[in-house]
Length: 256
Image 1 (cartoon, one colour):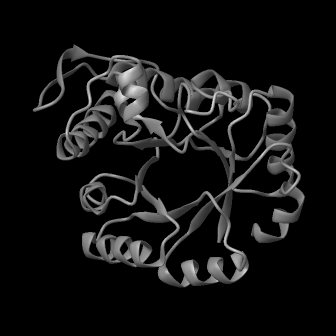
Image 2: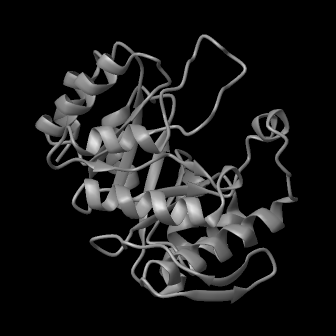
């Protein structure tokens, strides 16, 4: 089981840098952050966003950088294409696009963003990834979809390696069923029944596709749970830790 570290919200850059560099040195597979402008709790300042991953790309050597997750509703396809490609270059291919359909509606309302109904958001994410994969060929792309229209759009340079797309499905079974057709990895919440459902959908898809789990609140029997999830087909688990990130050292024995 590969272990990713999901750092809880903080405004302390020094703490973030120290924790990520320690995770890099200790053999963790990936580091992730939530991607929001704010939450209800203003005592949770968010250092997040594309520039954060750029700074970490230049400050680490081997750990993967995987947002958990980018909210598609907050970004136009051109922004996603350009920022992800540049981060691929800065990280020598270690950046993976963790992205979701968008379900933090309070944030969308606060910033005047539209909130489509669930199926529209799911279909919009699928179209977005289809478009991004074409844009990342370095060619001019014309695309007419239900949700995205492009006319000779392009973004260069392209990622240094094929961009891995990790779809954060959360608890949405509809999104899981859609994402198995285009994602490289599906990430779901830490629920055994949901994990089984996702594993069954992946098996039925008959295409190369990984499964990972997102853990916000740790179960007491975390090692037992990791073994159970691995038996169900989970390849990577993202475990959330909180500032001052002291639990990082104790987690090291969980990482392969």
